Amino acid sequence: MAKEGVAVPSSRLVAIDWLRGLVMVLMTLDHSSDAFNAGRLFTDSAAFDKQPLPLADFLTRWVTHICAPTFVFLAGTGLALSIQRRTRDGERPQDIDKHIIVRGLIITCFELWMSLVFGGGHLLVLQVLYAIGLGMVCMAFLRRLSTTWLLGLALVGWLVSEPLAGLAVAVDGPLGIPLKLVFSLLRFGWGVEAYPVFPWLCTMVLGFCFGRWLLAESPESQRDRAWRLLLRCGIGLLVLFLVVRGVNGFGNMALYRHDGSLVQWLHVSKYPPSLAYWGLELGLAALLLALAFAARLSFAPLVLFGQTALFYYLLHAHLLDAASLLLGMHKAAGLLATYVGTVVVVLVMYPLCRWYRGYKAAHPKGWPQYI
Image (cartoon, rainbow, N blue to C red):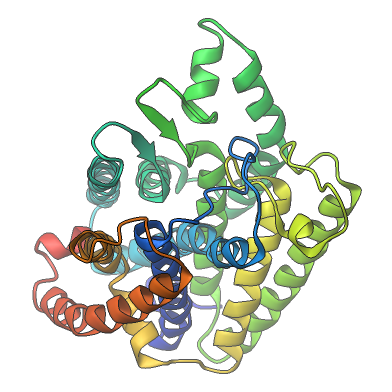
């Protein structure tokens, strides 16, 4: 076992960055669809299950659902690695806590900015940066728990999410306020909490536990043991998805299959996230990460995007929105424009991310440490 304070070999980070970069590209597809595609589906949830599901638009939307769970899980993993590095460099625990909280609040504020800009100034939609930011604030305190306790709390949290979501909708008055604040899709006429903190925090905790596991592995055995662990977890999660979706009862967040078609099997609730959703998306993410470890995948552009993920996230959405407006195609085109826009923005982002990575490396104590 590796001793506390030993640096994580870079090979561990390459696999993580590769996967994060891959889902950044998939996320670009979804955001390009939001900017250009008049037929984009905002669905796969108990709250928004009101639209038809044409196959091409559905699959274009569905393939991107792996992004948010992967982001949040790897945010937890990255946090564990960052804490270890800062501890190794001699930072005091209270200073580490301060950094985590400040960064979490900054990320949350970025969500407010993104929501106000892309919500037209009249609708506040709290999405993945909100979940990551407030999740990090919570982790500043939860990180002191043992891995066993964290794993137990996260898994139990997944199981109780559905009844909590039901209570948050059903309970009125003062008693329902705290439930709505931590779980429900909040609707006050001005905003929607599309990514409720509680279930997404559970996923961040699991990622944090995986980061601790990586830190405990020796450099000689970590790659082989990592892909084997991830393969087992990925298969187990996909089996969970198949069972929950097959039984078509608890674990689907009331978004049940209407028939046995592929679309209905894949049409799992993301808003709020169901047990079937976690099984499917994190199962696929675990298999991809297992592949990255086993095959030593290190495609440079994807690794670059993974290393500059928040910078990429903040900038690419503005580029897509500006391009769609300048071309007179804002939410008025189709899938062809969606895929062309994705390719163009990915190509534009590559040199920008290269520049930012170099700038961040040259200023490790400056503002880039929060982005």
